[in-house]
Amino acid sequence: MTGADVAQPLLELTGATVRFGADAALDDVSFRMFPGEVHSLMGENGAGKSTLIKAITGALPLDAGRLVLDGREVRFARPHDAQRAGIGTVYQEIELLPNLSVAENILLGREPRSRGVVNQRLMRRRAGEILADLGLDVDPASPLGMHSVAVQQLVAIARAISTDVRVLVLDEPTSSLDLDEVAELFRIIRELRARGVAILFVSHFLDQVYEICDRVTVLRDGKLVGEYLTRELLRIDLVNKMLGREAGEFKARERTFGEDADQPVFLSARGVGAGPGIAAADLDVGEGEVVGVAGLLGSGRTSLARAITGVAGLDAGIIRIEGRPVHLDSPRKAISLGVVYSSENRRVEGILGELSVLENITLAVQAQRGFWRRMRPARQRELAQSWVEALGIRPPDLDRPAGTLSGGNQQKVLLARLLALAPRVLVLDEPTRGIDVGAKVEIQNLVGELADNGLSVVFISAELEEVLRVGDRVAILRDGRVVETLPSHDVTVDSLLALVASPDDEQEG
Image (cartoon, rainbow, N blue to C red):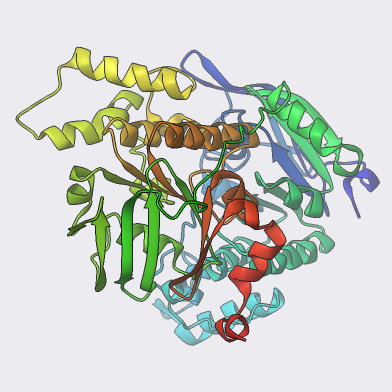
């Protein structure tokens, strides 16, 4: 069953308007979802997708418009009201409690009780039934934190559907999953669709949208562009509708790294080990070179990034900068030597959402100067304004809370903060995760321009095509070790996938 076979939408939003001050994040938008259909919401960062999701899930009130659920107008004062009405939400940043068990997370706030005390046995049994119903083999008594991000994502979905869910909102659910985990998620989505659940699937991965979604709604600048059947909309037309223009082109660079053994190495890591994630890894980064890092989830990508930037202390190995051994025992020490790190977790380790764009950009520079050497307000504003203009941060409002910006513009603010330090090495962990195609190309081009100006860049991404596109060379990680480093032009996406996925014994054979 698809929406085309159903006369009555299960959920319908008409004339929806949400304002933040003078700005309209949603401007007279209409949107509908049918039972038994997967619907994608597409648009650039800042198009209004997150605002629309918050409006239908009770996190934001409408300034104008109507929300109708199953033929009846509803108003949700809080997300709990939407949940009680049958609208479940799973956000990109998993909002579960890793210190509790899987069962406790699934039934949190709805624990079965006997004589006022939580009945642990009954709770585990009910959670087990919910997991089994989804075809998931997960121990309900196990601590959630011991499981992979993929399993935690599936547990979050199990929690969302553990009530009588009729509408399920999945916000960037695949951003931290590998190919096999995406396939498992899609199996569950298809099962829920067959049960008549209306599913909103928000993703920046066009391939996934076309694989799983029946219908797509496009927003641009807070306004509705249109609603389309996915099978009737060409991908290039979808991108053009999102951007309101043709997509910007990636600017290819002349690449010579890896062809000349005498090229100077700026940062060198030998035998680096840090915790369980990385062991005896070697990495060389030349001046003005972009080294892409490719590997499956669990291969040690983030552990390597944190080891060479002072975030994680080394258990073994040595790091040299311009041939001189250095002891990077903290991020502050790394920054003093020109090595800066952008975490994959923008929400927790990046942007401070309550602070303004100006405060976020100047934060690291002020911290480096120290408490007693305060920057003059005029100098702060001048510095921040220069980076807003250089990186095209939108809207160009220095006093706006950074947390209200789109994901792509938050990433640019974070890059501005790091670039204001005038670094020599920039380590980027998933810098384009969860941002739209237009902003993604902008950041990829920015990385190339920085390298052309002499900055060394380590670029980590789960998207193998992106690693090859941006990197001069690609370092292949497997089981915490760099098993090979190759010029990007010598590798295809298919051959790179074979390299990152092959067992060590297969490579040796």
